[in-house]
Length: 131
Image (cartoon, rainbow, N blue to C red; front, side, top):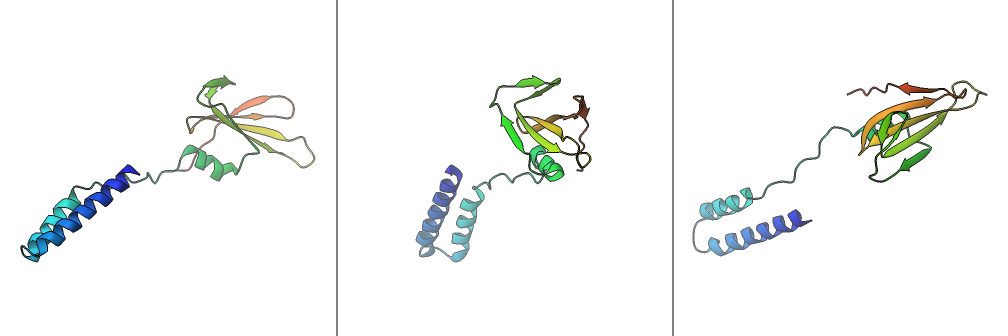
């Protein structure tokens, strides 16, 4: 917001200077002054075209059934540190009990994944992203 206000103020000042100078000197001088003032404005940093880990997980598995966030407090579960986790439920075969996949994040970075099998076994999962 502050950057937008600054850019508007500089443009207004440049327009005023150009208007005032237009009667005193030639158009080339006005254009040079205007270009000099505009060159002092730095454009906002471009957003990185790379996707976040959360966006990659959403693309790979879809929306989770449960999202649990614990704020900034980092916790540990199954040997994986996290401050947010997503749970997905899915059936391996029709008619069987559903498995649960838990995806762990720390500050929006993927930190690990485990699959809870219907027989009670917990298996760490290696999730790879196509870059």
